[in-house]
Amino acid sequence: MVGLMMGWGAGQKVWRKGPWTPEEDKLLTEYVSLNGEGRWSSVARTAGLNRSGKSCRLRWVNYLRPGLKKGHITPQEEGIIIELHALWGNKWSTIARYLPGRTDNEIKNYWRTHFKKKGKPSQKQLEKRTKTQLLLQKQFQQQENTTMINNSSPNEELLSNESTTESTAQATQETGSMYPPVVDDHWLPVMYQDLASWCETITEDTPWDGLWNHDDCNDNGNPYDQPNGYSCGGNNWYNEEYIF
DNA sequence: AATCACTCCAACCGCTGCGTT
DNA sequence: GAACGCAGCGGTTGGAGTGAT
Image 1 (tube, rainbow, N blue to C red):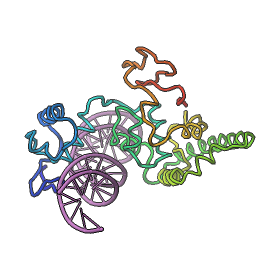
Image 2 (cartoon, rainbow, N blue to C red; image 1 turned 180 degrees about the horizontal axis):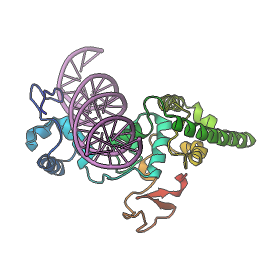
Image 3 (cartoon, rainbow, N blue to C red; image 1 turned 30 degrees about the vertical axis):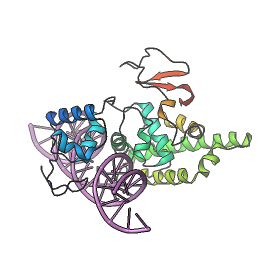
Image 4 (cartoon, chains in turn brown, green, blue; image 1 turned 90 degrees about the vertical axis):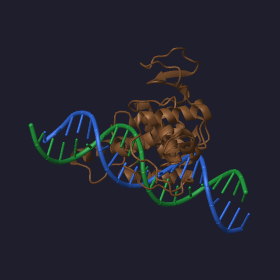
């Protein structure tokens, strides 16, 4: 599969396309370990790769980069994705910063597969969705009552943010139901209950390492050495402040 | 066993933003 | 300020794998 690729200083050169071979991966890895990330357009010239800089960058970022997590998205990660998507919409790279080891591409793929359902849902799906919507509405009403008593509404604060309102509306449109999206409903009501307060604590500029440290859990998700204020879930340390 | 539907994943494409000249 | 090139981002596509019918 070879085609004409323009851009990134490519000129009329015909770049190789399609799946990467182990040899190409090795060349790219060696190049980056020697020269560091960046200057992708020069990779083709200096690394002996017949690939566009764009392709090289993508391969490195999404597959070869050290520290990438392989395997399924954990429920915790899923929760984070939903929360952050409600905040920022399809800003996958921004969301990815809060999921160490996960790439924007991975998150984007996951979202599309699980939450952006196409076409009409089946009768079963509709029934399940209705049930969960009722549950969520109930929880929402309960929270409204509580916040009215406290005379301050985190939800109002949250919704007063223009981008949040927009992205939530967008997400609602995409999923075809109220937000957060209804998939497996066992944990969503709990999360939704805490959405406002949790979202208040983070911003787009909040560094992910403020949320958790991902290097201190073993393969079973058990702690090597639990830091103060952190709990272990899946393969991550979670700052207890942010656990739903 | 065959077919279909769905999920997962890698990769490409086009667009945008930013820095440099 | 305009033009250009590079880097990054988000949308989309297509193939492989898998489970259900």
